[in-house]
Amino acid sequence: MWLEIILMITVPGIIFIVLMALFIDWLDRKIYARGQSRKGPPFLQPLYDVVKLTAQETIIPRGVSKFWMTFLPIAFIATALTGALMIPIVVINEAGLVAGFASFEYDVFFVMFVLLSYGMLIYFLGFVTKNPFAQTGSTRSLLQALSFEIPFGFSLLVPILIVGIGDSDAKFNLAYISKNLYGVIGEQPLYIIGIVIALVISVIVMMAELEVFPFDSPLSHTELADGWKVEYGGWRYALIHLGERIGAFFIGGLIVTLFLGGPYIGPANLTGIVWVDGILHLLFFLIKLILVIGVMSFLRTLISRIRIDQSVRLAWKQVLPLAIVALMLTLGFKLIGGA
Image (tube, rainbow, N blue to C red; front, side, top):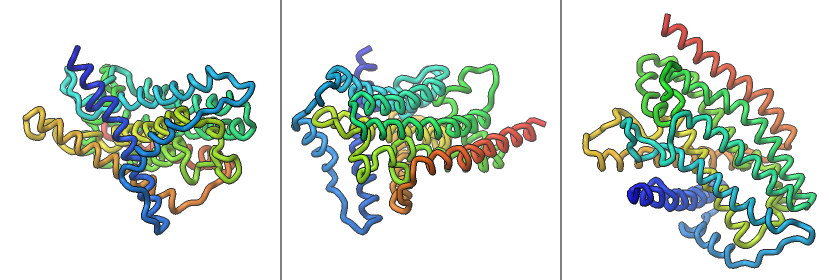
């Protein structure tokens, strides 16, 4: 019991996730700045920002529920933490899999529920403030999130189909998928086509869920004055800001797990020494996560903001058909391989 509590707090627990969220914040801002020929923030700037925000005054608008403006930021960061704790990184479970701290059977479906809840909370965060700018931003956020959830759901089925659907419940477990993905692709290299398409879609969905360029119309600093976050300040804004960066770790980690093999790059036991393998798994996972975040940050320096109608049209008319193509190709290769 004490070991589980220590792991929940350290690696891969809450402290580790928060530190990674701050690092992702710095990395994203640094790459974005370099893409604009700027120096970017110092390494500890994200930590300074959170500490500074917690010391600022919090103002509740007249006629707005103080309870909801307090509860929703807490629920927002708690939801992001819950999703992040599901990502398989370094803990070895009874089945010998590298699993997340909160992993269980069918956790793929629970993670999708957490991702949907994450988007819904953004809507309520803006709606309860009764500010027209915030409510417009939250409505845009919900519309954008729901539009991209469907193609992401189809993309998620690609690695599940590749690993295989059978009698075993493990087929719907994140740890099982990440462990077996490379081995199955090695037997049928054509699966790479479906995985690459699904990976591209997942990065687009990640940018939309995190509301970064070109999908930042829910925030629109020049139009909506920070959108759904406009009425939040002080420690409440700090929780929202940290929750967004933990969400980046969660969604980025989910992409690494489903499409890049998670913490694996070869055999599960590379050295046969448990603690050495644990360090290597953690290192491989972090390298892949940094690459995903780096690609996302680089892309947002190249593309300007698109309107919300253009974002929704992109989701339904381009991304969704592409996701269906990836799924059909994978299913076809699966049938060919079984024939």
